[in-house]
Length: 350
Ligand code: PBG
Ligand code: ZN
Image (cartoon, rainbow, N blue to C red; front, side):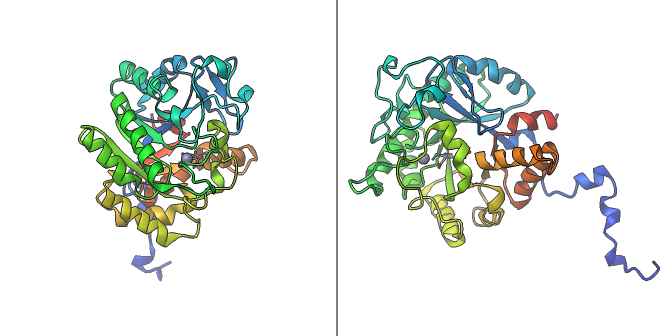
C-alpha cells in the first residue's frame, strides 16, 4: 500500500477503545440524564404501564423507596408528570388499583385543568416529599393542561374547539408559579401555546422566583406519532381532534427555528427539542441558534418503546441501541436528555 496517501489513513486515530472515546466532542455523563416520572393520585399506586416497558405510575407513598437506589447510583434530576385518576378518558381500572374517583373529594378534570395545581394533588405532594428526602435531586415539573382538562387538549378551548390563547397562557403561568411555590427547581411547559414562556417568566419574577427557578421550554415540539405510550400513561389523549394547530408539523424546520428564537427572546433558560431521534437536524439547529443555552431533547415514549420493540425482535442489542441513540443526540448538540432509559444509564455509566 505504498500508494496510500497520508491523508487517507484515519484508522490509526480510533484503533483502541480509549482513542475511540476521545472522538466525541463531549462524553456522556450521568448528570445529562433527566428521568420522567408519572405521579398519580392514588398514594399507594405502583402500576406498570403496558405500552412503556418497565415504567410505572407512582403514588406519592411509593416514591422514596423507588428513588432511593437511583439517587445512590447518581440520579441528578427528574421531571414530574401528574396523572389524575381520570375516569372519562382512561378508565379507572387501568389507572388505579383500588381508589374510586368519588373518594378523592375534588373534581378531577374540568375545562381549565383545575386539579393541575391542587395542593393535595400528586405533583405538589411529590415535590414536597422529594425535596424533604433528596435535597440534592433537581426537580423539574412538566406544565400542561391536557392531563387535567376533560377534553384532553393542552390549552383552554373556545366554543368551536379552537385554542383560546390568552386564558390558556394565563392558566399555564398560574400553574407554573404554583409549582415554583411548592419548591420545583424547574418549570417545563409542554403545551406549545404562543407566548407562554414570556407569561411564565413574568409570573415567576413577579412572585419572587426569577432567580430561583429555571424555565425549560419545550420549544420545538412536533405533532408526532411517538407520544402514544405517554398518552396511555398520563390519560392525556385528546377526546376529539388532534394537536396539529399547536404542535409543529414534522416538516417544519423554519417554524421550529422561529419557535426556538422566540422562546430564547421570551426568557427560556433551557431550550428543548422533542421528539429527539427523528429530529436531530432540529437539535443541531437549536445548538447553533441558542448556542449560549443548555439544550435538552426528549427521547419520548414512542422512541423508547420502539427501541425496546426492535431489541425484542432481535434487530439489535437493547443496550447498544440505547447508547447509539443518546450518543447521536449529544453529537447533534444536546446537553441534557430526558429519557425513560435513565435508570439503565446510571448502571451502564457506572
Ligand atoms: C403533554 C406532554 C406529552 C409529552 C410530554 N408532555 C404528550 C403530548 O403532547 O401529547 C410526551 C412525552 C412522551 O411521549 O414521552 N403535553
Ligand atoms: Zn399537553
